[in-house]
Image (cartoon, rainbow, N blue to C red; front, side):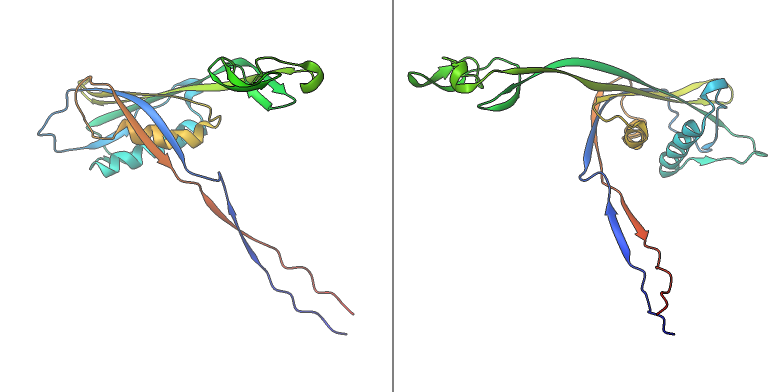
Length: 229
C-alpha cells in the first residue's frame, strides 16, 4: 500500500484593491499648556449603549495616536492627570438618482452639458452630450430609465482632553462624507486626522487627506488527506 505525499500551498489575497484617500474637515480648539510635563491619561468610561466592542476598538486607535505624542495610558490602580473622551456617529444619506441607458451610446447619468452629436443631418453640437439632437427611435431604439439609490455616509468624530480638575484643554471635531459604507475602514483616518499637527491653531478649520493602503492577508491551504492505492 502506498501513500501519495501532499504539500500545503499558501495563497495571498489582496483586499480592497487599491488605496483609498479619506478627506476630512477638522476643527480643533485648545487651551494647551506649554509647560505640561505629565501626560498620564485615562479614557472616560463610555455610557450605556455607547459601551460596545466597536467603541473600545476605536479607543485603541486614539491611544495609538496619543502615544506618538508622548502620552501614556495609566493602569487601573494609577491616578491619571488627564481624561480623554470620545464620541462618534454615522448617518446614511440615501439619494435617488436616475440612470438612463441609451441603446446607441450605452448607460449615462442625466445632466446637461454641451457635446458633439450625430443626427440625420450629420455631425453637430448639442446641449445633451449623450443624446443625438435629432433623435430617431426607429434607428436608435427606445431609451430605458432606471431609478437607483446612491448612499453618502456622513461621519463625525469628536475627541476631548481635559484635566482631572475639569479644565478643558483640547476639543477636536473631525467630519467626513463619503460613499464608503464600512465605518471601521474610515475610522483610522479620522483618528489620525484628529491629531495631525497637535494641538494646532485654535479654531482654524482645516482639510486633511489621509491615504489608506489596501490590506494583505495570507491564507494557508489545508493539506489533503493521504490517499491509499
